[in-house]
Structures are given as structure tokens and as C-alpha cells.
Amino acid sequence: MKDIKTQDLGGGFLDHGVASPVSTARGTVATVDGEGRDVVLIWLMDYNGCASLLMIDADTGACAQYRLPFPPGEDAPFASVLSSGNKFYTLFNSRFVEFDPVKRAFTFIRKTTPRAAMGMTEDDQGRIWTLTHPDSGAIMYDPRSGAFRDYGSVHQENWRQYQRSVAADDKGWIYFALGKTSSQLLALHPDLKAAVSLLPETERVPGVNAHVYRDLDGKVYGLANESKWEGPWYQLYCGKAVKMDGSAPLSVKPIACGLQGFFYKKFPSGRQIKEIDLISCKLTIEDPATLKESVVTFSFESRGARVMGIAVAPDGSISGGTTFPPRWVSYDPKRDQWTDRAVAHQANGISMQGDKFFIGNYTNGILQEWDPALPWTGPKPKGEAGANPRTLVECWPVIDRPHCLLAHPDGRMVIMGGVPGYGYTGGGLLFWDRETESSVLLKHTDLLVNQCVMSLAALPNGKLLCGGGTRAGTGGEVMAKEAELYVLDMATKKMEWHTALIPGVQEYSEMRVGPGGLVFGLADFRVYEPTLYDEEKVFFVFDPVSRKVVYQQPTVSEFGYIFLQQEQRKIVISPAGRVYVLFRKGIASVDPVTFKLSWLAKSPVSIDVGGAWLDGRIYFVHAARLGSYCVGP
Image (cartoon, rainbow, N blue to C red; front, side):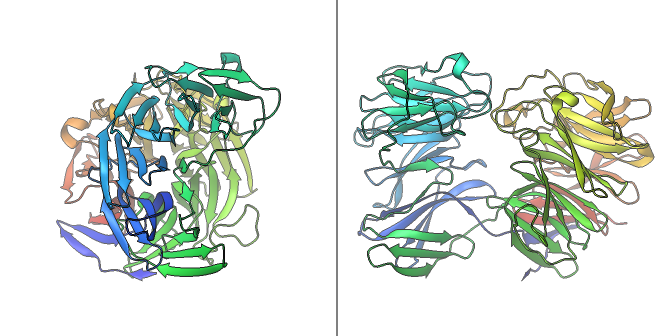
């Protein structure tokens, strides 16, 4: 636990401190600096993305933190390379970056085709190759000559592409593996502008990534399905693919490259990193020749991890989870005190029911139950006695990334919805029965085909109002034309009514039941879709009896935007039935008669993640910090 001192921001707003003052590594390598000293390089990510590179002296723990000379844009490395020339490369927020540990400086930066490297490699000529999400942008940089080429998109699909492995043969051809909607192996010649697809359509595998690697024999080998490390293998050479009868040689050429968890341990001196912990700030170095270990401590500046959501817990705390790294945080308003704990997953959906708190986790759509009255045990395997939080059920691939979690007012049912696994289309709906400790998982084919469930509201007589969305799982193909709203009978699990309530809407992002049984909602406040900011966002009021919209109001021109989170919690309803909506710029209130939104208070800080009501205050997150506003009883 850590005590803090809440700060008065003025105008009824308070700042309650950083929820979890930690960062995560998005690529770690062991190398050497200009003085021949062993050093560790780490791309550091906090709530706003990768803002700096950390260099740690392996013998003293002395640190230097180098700020990226461009804004991270809430983006971070998904791939990086330590070159044979001892330079550290990555690409994110549409910037290709070179860091030189000898000069201790960023020595090359270039703006590129959007957005982030999903795969990188070094070819036999020392050139750095990058393939970017979402449209297979290809980038080449030659450190020796300074030549740089941005090819733009070299392959088109109607879904966001993931290129998780890249390799070059000894003739200079570049190969990359594609997913997730449908796997593919592609070849690119450095003198051409478009990649060549190598797999016939009949051999592409849905919902997975393909895989490529460079072998010591100078050729590249690929698989159509990386999730099953088995054939058929393809030999890739000079831009051609030949299906093999047996397995690949698997004599992998050593290239220091990897994905966001890239961890290259071996120093040129022969020593290696045994362990590095960014929470305790301890670095353990091992000498394989002598088996001796040394431990140094270090320190660095972190602006804090991103908070995914907050809600009131049964113990009276404001609780929620962070991501990168995943942590569980609780703020006690009475003691002005934080508790920060390790967890295994990213908490997307959160909701209290009685004396228990429920958590919908990404990945794998895991539902957990937390009892604040019992000791916290931290991550435990499913079914292990005494675990707290306790894992109840996993929903992958039907639900992978939860976007809504409803602890039903009947005190018995907990319902979770969201988008499916990577590359899939159409999400499902989980029903967890606390009394029988049993679950029912509906697929999108049981509900609205090719749609997912983005919001939920409990109606009388065992009915459930579900807000649909057209979004597919990450890397999946969007197939539905517009989102629908529907009513589900909880007993029979059958739809009784559905309609495209507001024409053209792609997502019913949030719904809350308010005074008079009316449902207050937000439409098209979509997650991770910054290119859609020019679309109008709609606040609406729905009458479930007449099944009609009784009020709707565009919000962008007057109120601006809300911060997008994976479970929207921007509508806050007080015990007295007053309805509030949290925008980045401040808090709006809903007129109880006309339903018109108007400003209640402009905030001195950006309101990012919200929101929770406790003792007359609306709690929210700004940056990585908890804030609140005094509304009164």
C-alpha cells in the first residue's frame, strides 16, 4: 500500500495520484556501449505509449533515459531489431527509429507509411526491413549508405493485416507472413512495388498468422498456420514457393529481432541477462563461464500504466485494472491510500454484484470473481482452491476482448459480451449463473450474425437489451453493414426483437438504465478508431416499452470527444437518478425532463477513463492518475 496526498485542482476537482507508477518493456536487448561496457536497452511504454528508451549499465545499474524526439501517439513497438552493426531499430506511430548505443543518441528518424512495425529483420547486406500494420507497408533502410525507401502498401486486404514474421533469402528477396483473417505468405523483391502472394486461396488458413524464418542454407521457409507447428512447409527462394514433402531444416539463422516481448539476453562479452524486473527495478546478470550472478538496482521515470476502467468495489474502494503491464489497483478514499497488485490479464470489463466484484479479462475472454473480504492471492490456475481472484470461465474464441460486463440486478447472473478472437468475425454473449456455478456461451450465430455485443442493459421481466457492433476481432474482417439493438429473453436465450435503431450506426457503445426505466446510451463512440473522429457521435434515450428513441442529440460540436476505452463507462447515474456523461473536456448533465445535455463542469484535466459514483463524487482517470469531481448528494 502507498499513502498519497490528494491535490485540489480547483472547481470541485481533485487529483488522487497515479494509480500504478510502472512501465512495461516493448523490446529488450543486451549490447555494448562506446566504452565497451555491457548495457541493456529497453523500449519503455507507459499510459501514453513508448515515450523513451532506457539504457542500463549492467555492472553499476546507472541509467540514462532518452526521450523519443516525436510524440508516441499512444503507440508502441510491436517489433524491433538489434542489427549486426549494433544499432537498435523499431517503427511505431509511423516513425522509423534508429538508436546508437555507442553515440547514446537517436541517429536516424523518418516518417513512414502508417502505422507500426509488426515484423522486422536484417538481410545479408545489413539492410533493415520492416512490414507495418495495418496495410502491409514495406520499409527498407540501409545503415551503410543511408538509403531509405518507403514502398507504401505492398499488399491489399479488406481487413487490418498483421505481419508477425519477416525474413530475407540470400538473393535479396523479402518474405513476410500474414494474418489474421486469412493467412498468407508473400514475397517482395527490393526493386518492385508490390508483393507476390505465394499461397493459393485454397491453402490459406482462417483466423491465424502464417510464419516465415531464414535458414542457414540461405533460403526462407514458411508455414500457412503458425499456431500448428507442422506441415506442409514451403521452401521460399527467389520469389517462388515450393511445397515440401517433409519438414524444414530448422537451422535458423541467428538474427536479433523479435516482437513486442523481444528479449535478447546475450552481451558481446559472453555474459547474459538472467532476469530484469521493471517493477522492483532489479537486473540480474549471469556469467555462463563461471555461473556467477550479480544483481544491480536501477531507477527510471515512469508516468504510469494505462488504466482500463474503474468502478466501486464492495469494500468501498475505487478499483480497476491497468495494461502494459497488467496490474490491479484500488484507491481507498477514506485513507487516501493506493493498493497496487500484480495480475495476469488486462481487466476490460468490471462490475460489482453484492459482496463480489467481477472482472472480464483480455485475452481469452476470461471471467473472474474477486472477493475483497478475502486475502488477495494473485494469479492462480483455473480451479485452484483458494484463488482470489478466482477464474470462472474462458470464452475464447467466441469472446476474446470483453467490451461490456453486466452484473445483473437480480443478484445472480453475470453477463459479458465483446469481440471474438484475432481474425474472427462475430462476438458472443456469456451468461454466468452464480447460484449453480454454470455458464452458457452464445455465439454470434445464435444472436446477430457477424455482430458483437458492445453494451448491455437489464430490462424488467428477465429481458436483456443488447447493443450490437460491427467490429470484428483484431485483424478480422468487418462484414455487417450497420449495428442493431435487440431484446433477448434471459430464460430462453432467444431474441424477441431487433432493429437498426439509428440508421447507419456501427456501434452502440454504452447503455445504462436510468430513471423511469429509460435506457441512456452512446452510439458510435467507437474504440480504437481515430480515423472516425469526423463522424458524428450520438447521445440517445431509448424507451424499451415503446421500443423507440425518445431523444437523441449529436455531441461533437458542443462537447467534443470522449476518450475511447474498451468498456465504455462514460454514463454515470447517481443514486438519486441524475444522469451524467463524461467527455474529455468535462462533465455534462442530462435534463431530467427534456433529456438535453448541458455542461455541468469543465475539467482542468482531460477526462480519459471513467466513471464511478461514490459518496457524491464522480471518479475518473486522467492520464494515469485518478481524479474526481464533487457533484453532491
